[in-house]
Length: 565
Ligand SMILES: OC[C@H]1O[C@H](O[C@H]2O[C@H](CO)[C@@H](O)[C@H](O)[C@H]2O)[C@H](O)[C@@H](O)[C@@H]1O
Image 1 (cartoon, helix red, strand yellow):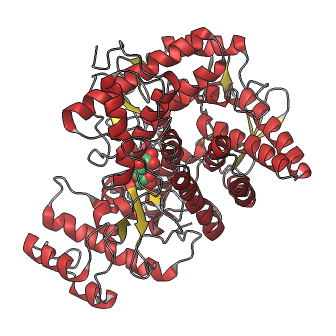
Image 2 (cartoon, helix red, strand yellow):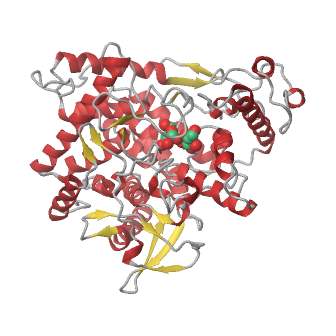
């Protein structure tokens, strides 16, 4: 733990320096509006020397706080602005005002005008890492191609965000840019053995929800690009190995004596997250022993690997953040994503003539499907539930399944496996059959998650951002697409209803503020989401991708109102 597989030792010292800068900046500028990530994203200024910067840092911890002026002078002299090592890059395939064949079923003038604006936003989010960026002077990692970033303070490429970015780029017919995004992620797998949380040296200790194979599949389905499939397959096998590693793997024995392998999130890190070190250290001050602090940091970084950072989903005692227990939880969504990855690999291997691999992955996927159904499905609630291992689990042994260990709290993730419907390349096998889909739909309708402006992440308002009343674009999309793929008219109608609520709130917020948000408050149409450890972000890659996908899937008739109802 603590190293990160990138092994960029020289970068460790740069990060040490930037973390010290972060804590001194907090002392100098105060907590109001403080953005800890800003400081670890700063490159060394041209000509500045790291040793000299370390020596010149205004105050040593424990001494008097530097003044605002001293801190400002230090930053100006030794560090360059965050983001200055990324250049804006015109996407080669952004046709303005709209590409040929764009959203043919969007007939409402208001919806269409807005969709064009969202389409144009890809230009603001496309970047290229500046030439010569190297880890000795930058925490930004070099990438081979253009990156599409989420927005605001998220100025680098992110893993799971990229899936919805790619979906949106495909609606925008930006096939070349979509492929470049994916080639960057494949490069990260080749360089680090897995896709990093994001393209920064401080993200080398963890991944994010694994959706790379899904991105390749989407691009292949839109373009028939076999070159991409051939290039991707070896990296996908490598990525699969990463998720199958001993530390991610958990074995549970069901009540019939059958053992099942499933997967959990676990970061290779037990220190404060550099991008939020001041926050993590403050929370860890509730623990007196070093061991407890390290365990806490480990749970925090593992929650960040889940993409749900942070949520009552990972807390033993919500809303108490110090009770995070991420690594003893077998998450529903992670296992659904890996099942999908296994099916995709099966398909790609078949396409490229690697029949043995294809067969092997067909078997692996079948075993995971049985595991998900045996350990995570709850037939009484008609949802899939996260499974909690014993508190002291090292996850090395075999755990006996116990119905009481399923977490009965309601989260949007409990419904994500319906997304697996009809994603089998054969198109004929549904992950969830008709009767089960009906049950899941019934359960979702009764869950309390669906509010006037979309699906909430959870029912609990903890002040964390992946909890009530926040709704997130990826969660709406996975559920809506899952419902569409159920195949029944009733499911499609329900899906369209959720999509309509979501599009309206995104539209209203955009009209009021001119920006797309990272998340929205599902209780109030047009209100962005709040809470959590950082201030709200705009831009925003996955929100743009999801509204474009919804508009493509359902269209927007001339007479359908787009303003909040
Ligand atoms: O800086 C704090 C944390 O921020 C990231 O998480 C959030 O933004 C990501 C980019 O949009 C998104 O993928 C994630 O789901 C959000 O919760 C980052 O991924 C974390 O690792 C980081 O600690």
